[in-house]
Length: 212
Ligand code: GRF
Image (cartoon, rainbow, N blue to C red; front, side, top):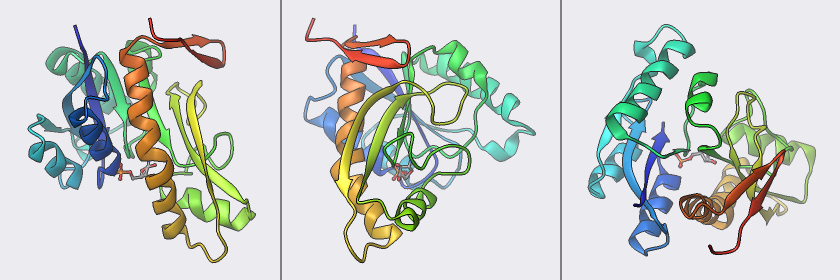
């Protein structure tokens, strides 16, 4: 029985597109993207879902007074309507509280555009990540896929991939390189490994089991 994957989005959805394309190539082994849920009504990611025939839902953050109320509604949608086995945060920009991670222990994953623990944590998202990396003067950066826990960007790391920082890079150029070389490769890999039950969390470490 293949696992039902729900993808949470807020913006352009290039990581969602990478998952859709990987699914089309048969690379999401034992998994199926069953829903796309956006926290913003105008996210282009919803267009991508529609074009791929994937049910899209909008749960506007602005309809809720606080993160806890939003998270409760989202968790209900995921469990009762979607029946999700895996929740993937792909360019999702809304703060969630621990109820989601308690409902989905080690079954919520996130893609972050740096080599965690560098350039991560509260307020460090999207283009800010690359601005900080350039400001610091690092020679490599990259992306990380990790399990999501209540502490921002601090869950057990599943996969990482590095990319060079080149002279003259702007935050936008670096972001694009990391998306192309790292994010869009790592996320489908991590989702497929999860759906094959090949990720074993041992404390802070995640062991990747050989094919069962
Ligand atoms: C990407 O940099 C991703 O790493 C971050 O959000 C940005 C936009 O992602 N989480 P997407 O194009 O909406 O997938």
